Length: 403
Figure 1 (cartoon, rainbow, N blue to C red):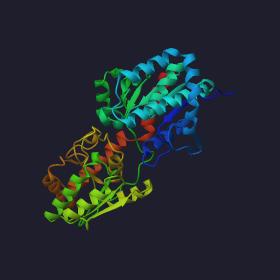
Figure 2: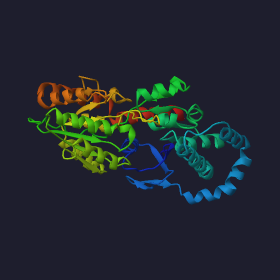
Figure 3: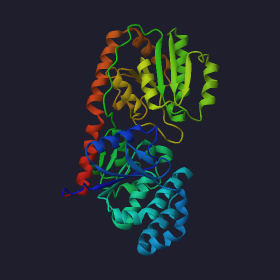
Figure 4: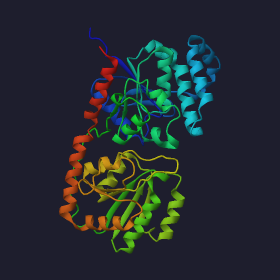
């Protein structure tokens, strides 16, 4: 009889989650390669995904920590000592991050018995927060080998996750989706040979649409959460500058978030409310419909006061893949895909006049637009294939698992 493939346990914060399609694509690609997966969601989510059960961590189980902590502490008192020492010798960057780490610790304590029976060949944390804490503690308690991913939120929000280096330095490998993230993790003291930039990807490439022969009005779209790091106040000022410069346009901002009332008020104050539509949250297939409508995707990301910033938002390669032109700010890792004058345009959000001139050219210069579109699609084909990138992650899994 054939031997069952080694089990890889994936730990997520929330899975499946509609705004984290890159993780869904990773699981789809892993399954296509025959990986034997067990999925765990630490907060929300659960149910099943593509026929694969997703085990949800019930918050009610945290009540059982009253006796589980003493039990696990008796088994491995040095682990409890290390955790307690960490709690009293460092300060969490935010209460949110503190409780994320406590959630991961609670999961590890309560699921330690299940993992002893499962004996996964590898535990993989999909985020550097709660999932990485859970994976790290499962390693400390019972020696389960683990790996982890670290994304922009884990690295930068309020200076980064509370215990990020301590957790990740013990991982078999760490992967991040941008070179910016890789450099930041190495700068924090992680061994360069353990940190890999493995991008996300599309499980299949969409049809490359035709350039609209007349781009008047210019169709502009932005897909973003309505939060500070997206720089949407700057984007509205760019729209006002377009209007003042006589560039005919229609704009749609797709997404939801706490800044909606403030942004709607600013749009009215700037006199662009008639040209700008806030669509709210749309399911992912509707986002693709918006990209089909759009001529240009705008990304006006900035570094928020908390330190949070984007890595390379999925929507940028998605737009490039379908033939939407992209204009982006140079903040974060967007310029790893968008090279000025090659695959798109890059301009600082403070220079509205530069955005106006760039967008004006994209609305009239067909040859230039086609050159950018072709190069953008080529970048996606080379760098943003979910199955090819999953193979790279899988190769690291196999190396970590060993013979």
